[in-house]
Amino acid sequence: MFRYYFKLALRSFGRNKILTALMVLAIALGIGAAMTTLTVFKVLAGDPIPHKSERLFYVQLDPGTREGYKPGEEPEWQLTRFDAEELLRQKKAPRQAMMTGGGGLVDPRTDALKPFRVSMRYTSGDFFPMFDTPFLFGQGWSGAEDTNHARVAVIGKTLNDKLFQGANSIGKEVLVEGHALRIAGVLDAWSPKPKFYDLNTGKFDADEEVFVPFSTALDLKLGRNGSMNCFGREIVNDAQALNAPCAWIQYWVELDAAADASTFKAYLDNYSGQQLAAGRFERPANTRLRNVMEHLDYNNAVPGDVRLQMWLAFGFLLVCLVNTVGLLLAKFLRRSGEIGVRRALGASRREIFKQCLVEAGTIGLAGGLLGLLFALGGLWAVRQRPAEYAALAHLDGTMLLLTFALAIAASLLAGLLPAWRAMQVAPALQLKSQ
Image: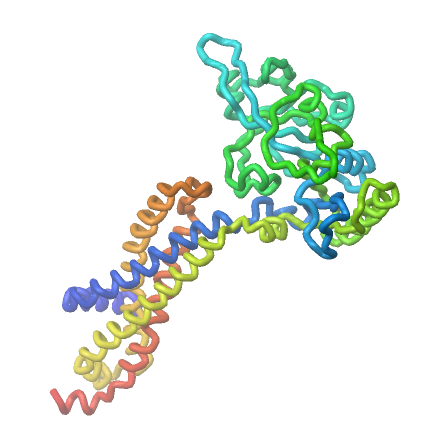
């Protein structure tokens, strides 16, 4: 019967072209607006490392001065070098990594290319297994190489293609800011968005192409990117010195299970208490330990205007559906005579209801096709904006299927009331009026 009802729906479109076109357009506009904003929201709000995001935690301590302290306030966003190195040394988590962003010039050592600037990351060896970075060749460096300030590096696939034409470059050297670094590993394509592990240098910044041990970066005085907050009472001559009262290092830990967070949090509180007793900290223990999604949510990885646009778009879709209900009701009731004849010939109310819903669903399918074009146009417009996330606005396979599913579901929902009214048509009255 579905094929028969589908043919009837197509014939009905031909008889009521303007009314049908208005319904298709109404659904298409609502679907196009909703899918454009929903796609952008999905890109920004998605879990960047779903298989372990509940076990990865961002660490915050409060080493600030007593002056201006308010109990319960948010502690420093980042750690001081002393605290980061001390937590790393104590190794109370299965994996832990200290890090900061940087940048510098790479010399290709060839006349065919001029020196060019790349983004870098200065970190510790656990960074790579902690964040499951995929390797094309080789691997990350060891903890011993961290301790020994080894002049090693991990480079990205793009840089490897540029310098070594994609060949295995393990053991070769890359010249960064005039310093030769031995290549220990080459990352495969890896670009988590948002860049959850360092929101400080930009949630959607370009990917880093060179990774260097933190200790080595300090030795070579490589350029650093990102914010720094110095809170001591004295003038700081070297903000990156071990004992400088300046917070500028991000610190992540990976625990065996999410339930271990309370134990590690107690360790951080105890560490803060020890530093207070030693005179380094002036404030009582005030620590934070947030997992990946909590960290993103707290730091507003999804801009407020994106959420608002999404809700407004779905509100517009609702308005479009209300209009579609009215148009469908007008269309079905205009065919009361035809429906009355079908009822008189033996069609049940249920069959009339099904016929009307198939017609509504067919309108939704047509609206989905046109709405897809509107969504693609909307996403193209988003990509022209200067927003940092604009380049990520693309429709993937999941969202493509969701476009049609939402269009058909919306049209069926809009068709419920008109279909119910149509099946209430009394055949005797319609035959008498004919």
